[in-house]
Image (cartoon, rainbow, N blue to C red; front, side):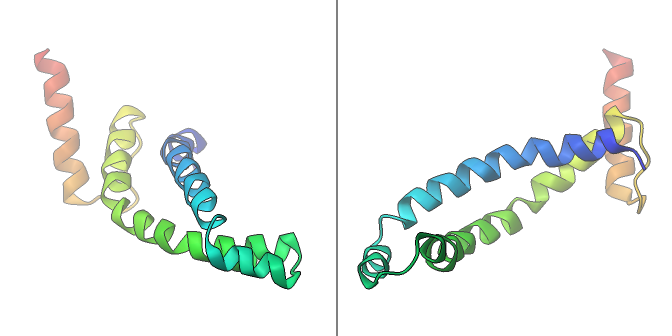
Length: 107
């Protein structure tokens, strides 16, 4: 298994996910129910994971599902750049590879 194409796909999207998660956590930790949990005397770890992380992950899972199209198209690009055949050999990746390789020849 080639590690470099996998890293190209994963690391390319991990930064956007991390920035989005940080932004969501900052906004969630300012909510009233977090203040109420602190007033009840809950531990900071429990507040962070049980209340904060759980509510921030809701929108991150939705964003992940919506970005699957971009991940798949990035996978096609990585297959072509690294000359790595797809595991399922879908017609979409073959046609995209033909289009990209023909644009290389004509340039």
